Image (cartoon, rainbow, N blue to C red; front, side):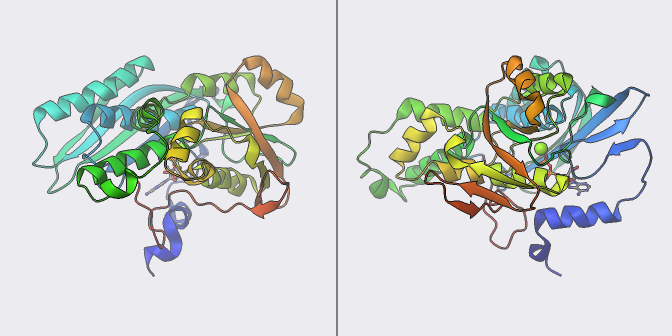
Length: 353
Ligand code: ADP
Ligand code: MG
């Protein structure tokens, strides 16, 4: 059977079924942002790992090594944030191509360490190998959380309200700009794009590119949500709203209705989408790597949530029927399919930063 028949998430599900070593200490195993593992009666260890491959997740034509280090840390810190935990320890494993220099790798660790230090996380190990071609980065993050405060993807209940922090779609638009910049430099699209009648919104573009290359993991906000015990379910938006909401619904056995008009879109995204002559919403629905937190809150806890003062927007409701729907400005409901990134999908979109 070809991998494309299963897709990334079907394959992970298969691996989950084959997984060895079930143990009562595994509170949450394969299928969430991080595993939650019982270490004492009251504390859990959180463990997550993410691999970034040159040509799949990043392109060195527009990614400096400092940003690569930063983003490798951010993706993993974000998974700890999505469980409501505190990051503690980091391991980095590198496959290094012959083209890489010592200076570039120093920059990588400078970017990684700035973010780790900001989150009081220590680099404690890893592995170093040569790679015949292309750079591979694998970062593992260990964190901790009080057992009772863990927020999984699977706890959403019908009637819960759906919230998301920050704004969505900025990172995907930033990526598109970076790629088009590379194409422009190779003159492929120079003529076409110079015809745009809207003036190049330079500062808006810079903000989107920044969000793409140097995302801020929402660790403090995840912690607040965990300690307040407002949220039934949570995930970080790494694959795009439609896919990540799909993970919450899939794990919780629910569906959802999203109000398109309530999805938070930044002004830089709106301006840049207009410049690119594209609607802004698909960047939020299908574009990944925003690393915002998507979570569900029962109506009785909304007041408590609001008292936390998080920059979060209410975007919809969890439903009992297991389909995801989106309502447009005219009140029309259509099915919301997961259209975010999927490795091994039949027509994989290239993910890069
Ligand atoms: P995220 O986007 O939050 O990083 P992923 O979609 O990468 O999450 O992974 C979802 C779940 O599947 C996680 O629990 C992860 O640990 C698990 N997983 C992914 N690939 C594998 C694998 N090859 N073996 C075991 N578990 C895996
Ligand atoms: Mg995640």
